[in-house]
Image (cartoon, rainbow, N blue to C red):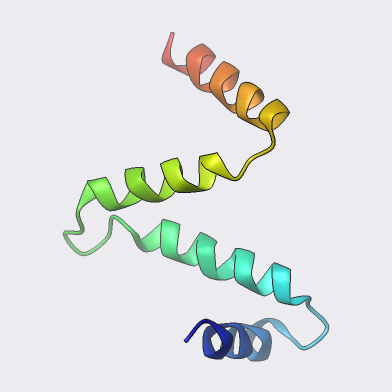
Length: 72
């Protein structure tokens, strides 16, 4: 299923795009629509928490710092 989604994204974005770029666009599209159509807001939160785990430690700290500043 993932391979098919990447193939479709490649067709839509152009064959000159890398597979990783296409996968990023698929993820961005999912996150953008995660809370649409009466979606469960926990879906977006769950996705964000899972993606956060994949960030390098330095980017995690930057992300937390920016969230803290915006929340204040």
